[in-house]
Image (cartoon, rainbow, N blue to C red; front, side, top):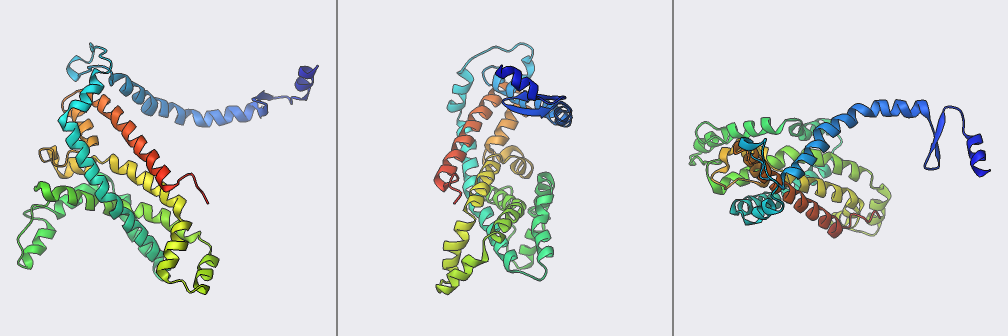
Length: 311
């Protein structure tokens, strides 16, 4: 009797799913719009991910791609024994530790400036965001020319003031700092807009109350501004961290070959193993281990920064 009542209450052209009623035409229309995106995601994202995970447990190679063997965890174990992986991981951590505070500090500083600038705000916002619109390849080539040892603008200026030119991208001790600076310069504008939006959402009454209590600007920044943008800061930090761990294009273009390992990052190493040497199985194993590492670090960072607390 209860089932019959449910059937009787169902409107024509509708169906029930998980206790809710949906229109057939609306559902088909929604799936029609979603189908191209879902199909593209399956073909170009999820299917390659699945193939990469499967390759991680094989000895697949470009020369024997049609006859590879299942080797289980042997390829994974090889990742932890390879000294080149350790060197690439150290270079990546060096980049992450260097670029994170520089890029975030630049983004936050620019956001604070734009918050208080009235005249020319839109022009400055566009100027600060402009590098983000450039592709990584264009940015890398631009700074390669500026940092060129013989004909670069920076060394030309050094010669004009009587200083000696510097081999910025040819010296292992200066190449990675240059890559860190270029990456922070190119990406800070994106985080700037996100932080600026968070700063503008802080109620003015909180600053007025702090001024009544005679709090200095620094105390207002510590006790009002930072707590007000904390959830946004967690989001920015995690996205920056993931992006920093994925660094590949800049060292690949600015220092071809990785300067004998001095600028060889993990993503560059994975690309190099697959594209240059054809070791699809090994590169997939490195990528799988590296993905788990990034996910673990991101979760720990969220826990440490209190990302679950939205108050």
